[in-house]
Length: 421
Image (cartoon, rainbow, N blue to C red; front, side):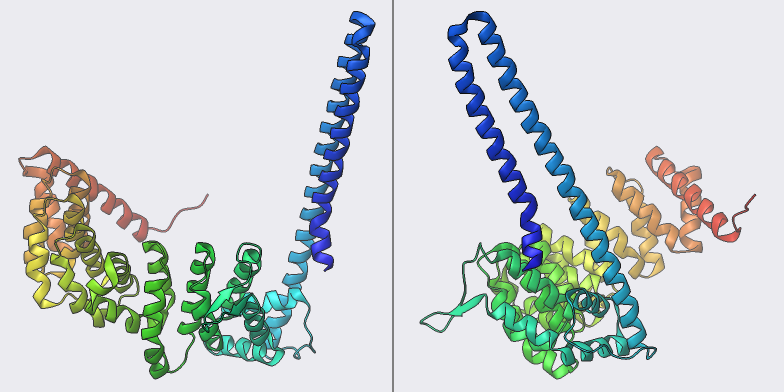
C-alpha cells in the first residue's frame, strides 16, 4: 500500500501544478480582457502578466519533474542495496554458511531469492527451490495469478478486467518464470491464452521455463502434447515461438518432434521455430527429421532447415545430396547456409563445392565459403593459398587473400601473448 502511494505522489504533484497553471492562465486571460479598455499600456501589462504566469508554471513543472526523478533514483538505489544484502545472505544460506531466515519474508528478500533461483543450476538451484516452497512463495504467486482470472458459465477461465490488471499479470508471470516451478504448469497453461499479446508471450515464457524444471523424463513427455497445443493456439510471432521452444530445455525435443512430424497441422511459423530450436539446442536426435525440410519448396522453411543442420554435430547420410544441390540454389541465402553446412561433408567433397562458391556473384556467399575452407584445416588452407595466387577470377583472389590475412593474424594473436609496457 505504501509503495502504491509513493508511486502516486509525483503524479498527484504534477496534477496540482497543472491545475495551478490552468488557474493562472484563466486569471491572466481575465485580467488581459479587463485591461483591453486601458489602451496600449493595459494591453502590454496583460501580456506581461500572462507570460509571467506561464513561465512560473513551467518552472514549477520542471521542479516537480526533477524532484520526482531524484526521489525515484534514491528509492531505486536503496532497493538495490537492500536486495544486494539479501542476495549475499541467501548465498550464505544455500552454501551452509548462515541459518535460514525466519518468515514471513520482506519483498526484497523474495525478489533476491527469485533472482538466485534464476541464476543457479544443479543442487544449489534445488536448494533455492526448496526454500521457496517452505516459505510458500510458489503457492502465493500461483494463487495471486489465479485471482486475476475467473471461471465463466462454460467452465473456461477468463481474465478479470484484462487491461486494468495487465501490469500485475505481467509482474506475476515474470516472477513465476524465474521461480521455475513445475507446480505452476496447469495455471500457466491458462495464462498462455491471455487476451493480451504481451501477457500471452510472458505466459509462454513462464510455462516453458516451468516445464523445463520438471525432473522426470516421463512427466516432461506426458505434458508435451498439451504444451504443443498451447503454443499453436497462442498466436505468437515466430520469434516468440522459437524463444519459448528453446526455453523448454530438456523438454524441447518432445515438443519439437510432433511439429516436425505434422508440419501441415501446425503451419510455417511453428515449423520454422521448431527447426530453429533443433539447431540452437543441437538436438542431434531430430537431425533426420529436420533434414527432410532441407529440400522444401518454401524458401523460409528450406533456409531454416539448412541453418539448423549447420549447428549439429553430425549430418545424416541421406541429406548430403540435398546439401550439394543447395550449393547451386538461386537464392543466395540458401547458398550461404550450404557453405556453412559444407564442414559436415567429407573434406574432399566440401572443398570441391566451396571452391566453386569462391566465384559466386554474392559477396556474402564468397566470404562464408572462404571462411569455411579456412576452418577445414590444412587442405582448406592450401586451397585458399592456391586460389589467392593463380585463380582467374579477381573476386576469388580478393576474398581468399582477405581471409588468409585474417586467419594468419588470428593465429599470431593466439600464439604470442600480448606484450605489456
